[in-house]
Image (tube, rainbow, N blue to C red; front, side, top):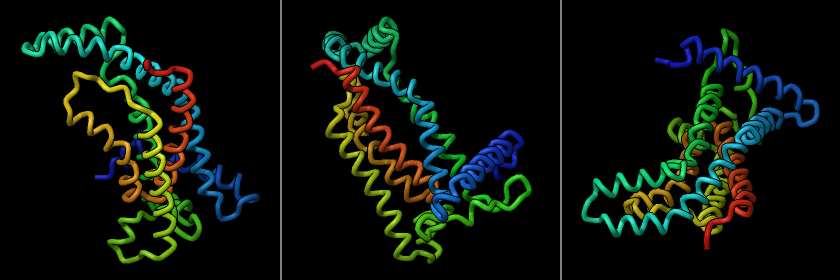
Length: 243
């Protein structure tokens, strides 16, 4: 079942498609064939600007977790033989500080519907009972609705497709590595070891996702990943972690 046949989602799909087409028409006189790709970038920047308050909240939460880390270690040492008491004391500490172990996850959750909509826009040949003309647009000759995995499985891969997707994936992976090196995460000492390791793995998961989604969504992921690194570097200076 196609969820975008449901009236609310169909409306959002039609609205998103119309907005991208309007931006594409606006950019076309100046940028020609790059207009649709630039429309996706423009949408990305608008979304990221709207999420700046959420990014500030995330930076504050990270600073708070880092500040609480020594107290969390003390709780862990004191109640290590009583897991239930440790859990209660830990959650009470978070409540007292008006934060939670999962604080700061909202930016990822907030962007998921945007990526899903872009994915849907470039997969539907018809939207609102009209032909989806966005599917006729490309980036350097690669259709915006093409995914690398889809091209590989259907035998439609060419050198340009490989180069474009490889470039985006390398940028995403490079930014993830810079994030790992420049932004030490504020880890919860009460968290299990596997969870700490998973945080590092997730930093590179976006590069994997970019292989499966249409080029338009991969372009969105690339721009938002670069933006996120820049924003976090600025906010880290505003909300530094304890030494």
